[in-house]
Length: 636
Image (cartoon, rainbow, N blue to C red; front, side, top):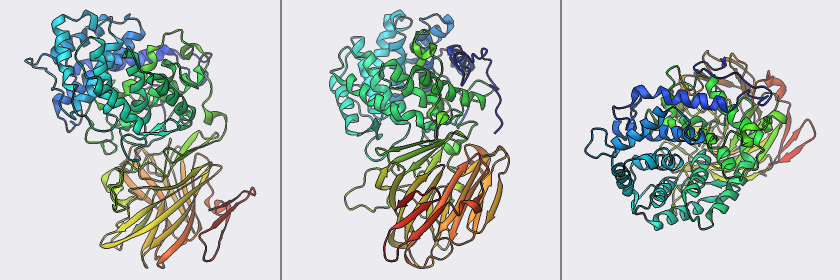
């Protein structure tokens, strides 16, 4: 896509000495924050207790959405106010002080909904609590006693309350710790049990699952690591927990820069992606808590590169607003709990403004991202992922053999139970592509999926992922394929092998005789229809700006291949296309299929790629040997 420097923001001049990679300085961050805060003022209710932004209402209703607008923007305002030592436009402070007074007036026209068990208000209360703590000298300490009492009364709905058993436990933790910090009644048991609970979800190497199961995504950084760090800034006595949280965040950040492309884009995976640059929260948290392994110049380069990436692509929009989408508004990539103010959890991406202007993260010269220095490859066994990036085009790809967003299986449960989510169930994601999420395209499930097709064309779904292996350059898993009207469960086992810029997938597929087998590669999307080419055993599609995706049959496929096109199905653009391979009639029993997948800004030559590896299968043995042109041999 074409990229304007900053289409909807007036920004300071770039500084290519301090920031040779992005040109951005702290002043750019302050300007972006100020524009976002100014832009929402026309949507405020008269007392500033709610910001009722335009867009689709969430399932919680317009009043809850209005509170969300207040709370999430208050988080951004707090970082701006505290980071400037209160030296901001006084109207900014006055707006949020007035909103606190109006929102906690139960008899008023702008009253916030009470905090009840598992209510959306719990999420928003945590943002209010953090913002109040960080701005205490300028807001809380200056509120009338009656308003402070009403704020405490509103927060008291948390005490002894029940939250959803996932990252929501931390909303109760920080909110009740704020109550403790102002001498208000609270439950130490609520706080301690919430912090104990996230320990149950820690899987090692800096990774938490968001609740029971295999729920790995950006909530690991912008919630499960972030809130314990923010909690420790409020707590008088952390009971020794902060050291553990700092150690885990340090380990997580060792790998985290590998999720970002050279253009600043984060890998597009998981839910709530409308939060966009909230993905930067753990980077800033590491610097704030002095537990980051990243050099200051790398932290700022990563953060500035990502914020600039979105700004260059029209985020915020011409009104200065964050919309429900990735670049433009795109509702099929959102969740029903998201309302028009939900994207303002992106405020967490501005956490770095709490660091003083003379902190090394703002004064050190920028350093390159890992993918800017060399090709990269990283195995992350905790979430079951492989990451690999290519320096020449700056793309990072994620191979998924572990995160499925399914509840933990019950004893004796169907191995294929669950509902598929394309943000989790696909075999691969990247910084340059998104899964097909519009219902009509998600039903087809072509992209990055190995499916059995029923005679009517219904694809099997990769719901629960059963892990087998995840180590340097190789990961494997299986899923149980279901077909309509067939009680049998067919095992589809996939091993991904990384070699240079390519992913080679080796599939062992159980299927009934006559079933069709289909595999798709990465979907590319653009404002204009991507070009498509096919040949014997390969298919390729290419966007107008030179992003190509190809699938190449190395073993076990028919010679026919095709490109599936869709419209308004992808967060990256209105026209999308996915290359895919077929086996028209499975012989029954178990078959082996080997595919090379390429996603690149290079020109791809699929017929040449068919010679990239020699495949040897052994009769009556599950072993497949891959021999690459450089002499590398891999046995699967």
